[in-house]
Length: 416
Image 1 (tube, rainbow, N blue to C red):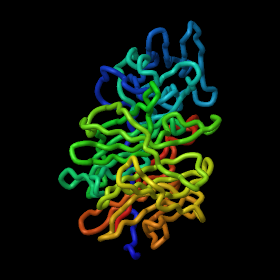
Image 2 (spheres, rainbow, N blue to C red; image 1 turned 30 degrees about the vertical axis):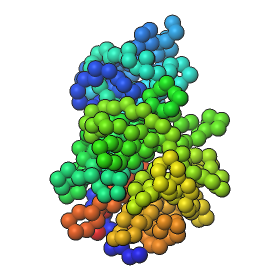
Image 3 (cartoon, rainbow, N blue to C red; image 1 turned 120 degrees about the horizontal axis):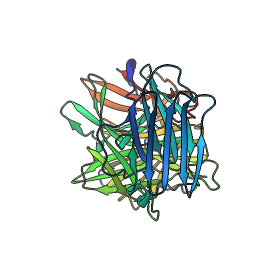
Image 4 (cartoon, rainbow, N blue to C red; image 1 turned 90 degrees about the horizontal axis):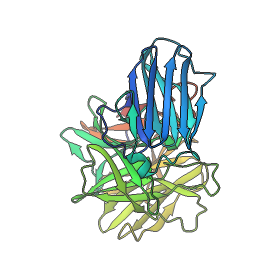
């Protein structure tokens, strides 16, 4: 199939360390407390006898973690001192990662970080219910970048619109690997190429008492309910024996377009029959005629992955329809898109830096001729003003030299 060429249309990156407004309850381990950067600042997150604190003084930034009667102090030799006037100081908890930030020259930089895994169960709901802030208001954590942008759709695949705007889900990037990120909802203005934050979504998993920032999601309006399929990246550790990623499904009639929510989920069993698979992610759901179609990714190992498509009369009775294994080493972002009467699966091939278009047998039938920046940007297409807008992202990191992989990216736009 032939599509018109897409030309670069610009980019945006809505960085926000702390969401506006005070939280009555944390709900999830994605919170922040911040203050004006005077010469002496102390901020803390406290739950019971656990205290997570930062001090900023003439010696720079230092973190202190107290739990079980033991206090440990942490200071970065590489980045623990500011390079310019400190405008604000922030302390964030993202998953199990405690981070101190300094805003200098309008840019947020990480000045220290501590991994809390194995010491404090920050996903525990009782621990979260008691969490409070000292030195400033308890606020939600925002993001240093956005990726995995996907249209919020009706079950038939058409976009949910508000006047001339569309809604998208995104992965709000944290200061590190995937377990520092979470799912957020945004309004996108296709004319102005502007994004406005709407909500943050977190998840309980079946058989687990914790709350996680799972992401790489698809939000679907099905009648009077919301369906939200998401990938369990919220505590992923590739070094953990038997590490895997799965897909869960939440169903709710709550207003997910505003506020901060924790959703109960159940397993969405995506078939990998006959495939070597260590995990699945990037779900995209459409109800076509009398069956559901679900596009996703399966990994033969971490990180080697390829597109898969399942179908069934219900989301509980899906069967493998097709898989594109050969020639796909780093292909993800599988997205169902209707062109006329035909469904196509759009994917992003990071190895070859291109956007293949496939039929429902996952046979390649075309290609999206669009700029391919960096990382593996998902191919999200929005019909607008007689043409198409492509919404993707790049792999540009943020936060400075202390931040490991995972802080990307900027949102990138292209138009026909």
